[in-house]
Length: 276
Length: 276
Image 1: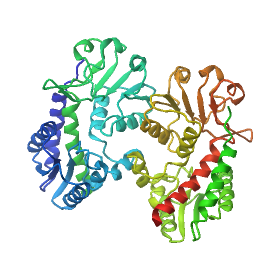
Image 2 (image 1 turned 135 degrees about the horizontal axis):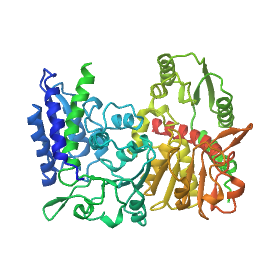
Image 3 (image 1 turned 135 degrees about the vertical axis):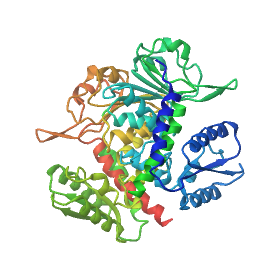
Image 4 (image 1 turned 180 degrees about the horizontal axis):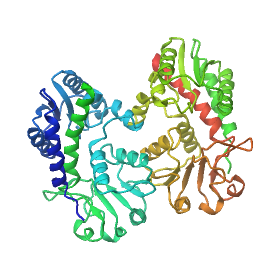
């Protein structure tokens, strides 16, 4: 079955609209963008659209690519400390000249719905954070929705990046799965894909995973987003896989919209904790 | 080859003795013990012995098992903030009635050579901490000493606990290895052990790993410590394995003494950073 992430995300957003009513104040989400990368702008547009639907005051702060780490960090921290700012999102990736984590640490933990500050990552590591990184929350939601048991399951994570592979590896380890983290140096990836009961792929290599590589009834979460010939692509050969797998998230329309929905869920959860 | 951890740790301690001379002040290491568990006391004795050798002022603070989380956290934080305290070690495990992480977060990051506060764990997660959890530092030392390449290597971590399995999984992922984390729910552990080029075992199950289960030339880091018939045991059947493996750390006398040595190395490294 191909999971309809767009449809599911609309259900979540409908619930968030109700939740929004319980907040009687303006909710400003500050979004920090360096440069004007077209892919980044398109991701920001998606967030802006949902913000509007949820009556969240979306405020874009743009900086030139020439900005230095120290200045950007100071800006992020200043914006983060404004009482009117309720959440801060730094659009990644930042230019290579910038020390990304230094900038992200400028976000105050309780205003960090993306879970990217060290403060929140430390709590995520020790399982004491009340929210999960948005893509992890999206996958947990699918795991719960489709009643997928994880204990003792053979889970393969392809990629080990800070946004997808690493947090998901940690989360699946916490759930009691047997977790393998593969990367571009992995020898004979097919040995791992064939044994996996669940695959999370974030390699960013279109057509990396084909139907010959997986066992039937596998569950695949395709978390990659690559632009190929002006089309958004994941790692999976969806056409070949769709009749063999048990579940698969397509790209586009799979984890992407769900991840954006859970960014806003996190924003609201943090606000509720703060006011409780 | 059986690695002589005791001998190697003596070399490290000899170097630390030289390093000690560069500090002109008293170095107090505060050790927090709740209850009087005999295993904990024996681990503390090992640390005390090395502290003496290194002219480190070892100060044991003991609390009754009846102490509550809040009171213990306050004690740890108070001791941690004393200018005379240069490092704090909370002897684990704490009684089940206590919220361990809450207590550990009472340690100030720059006085946390064990890397157990969330503050330091967040930095470890983002690879920005200048020290590594002691057992990770011990394994990195062996990896460097024996010139073991890790990129693309098939690494199996058995166990996912906070002191060994979890930090080591993360570290090996950072090194570019293909890392599998197994646990007590893992089906057919032998499928994983046979394929592994490097095994880190911290299951705490004597005789779990036997020679039939591994490929020849495997490298095994046995990080388990269990008391069986009043004898300290690891997870490995050392007798059967020693002629098949490329390298193996015995228990006792393997990672244990190295881990203690790197606790003191971390204490000194943090002090140098602070004064620079």
